[in-house]
Image 1 (cartoon, rainbow, N blue to C red):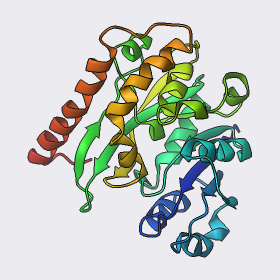
Image 2 (cartoon, helix red, strand yellow; image 1 turned 60 degrees about the vertical axis):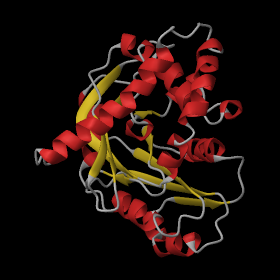
Image 3 (tube, rainbow, N blue to C red; image 1 turned 180 degrees about the vertical axis):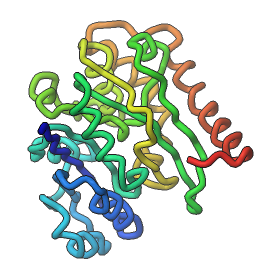
Image 4 (cartoon, helix red, strand yellow; image 1 turned 135 degrees about the horizontal axis):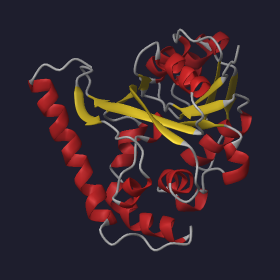
Length: 260
């Protein structure tokens, strides 16, 4: 019987009020073959004490200064030993206790290199504020500004040796360039897993990064150029347009009583 070991990496720094929910969303998964790796940037607010309470469910814990979140992610990826790797940042949560089982089964049952899914931005009451439902993969979508939530992406670990890690020089757009490299500039087998994979929280690391979105858009052009191609002319307007559409979708679904 085929198996699939899944490595999940969480990066954190002074997340005392939110790290517990993130850890529990991973260690409470009903799938057993998980390697959980936690990379802390040297927290001083009590985060490490909370992490210590869950050390029996965490395979590897590193706490030391780093050169930013992408350096921390790279550390975790290089420590991973799973067949498949993915991310869940401090403050964010896996959607439910069955997500990793669905991801592992999809890799086992399908000839695929990378999967991605849907995500929700939720408020303090766990109500959806922004809904990011991903379409079925077409390479042309990338040139029209589409990008799935980065933490909804899971990929086969061996690809990292061939196509590389996060480019620290491109902070805060390293995740976008990583996405381009894997989804657009190389011909990999990519499929949508049609489920919600994560909930990310307002005020968490992911949404703080989103506040730098306008600044990052200029850098996104450079992400195309270093991969040998000029960015599409309408790339930036189309990318910016997608965010308000996601907010409108969340409002409509909440108004109609849609259950996720």
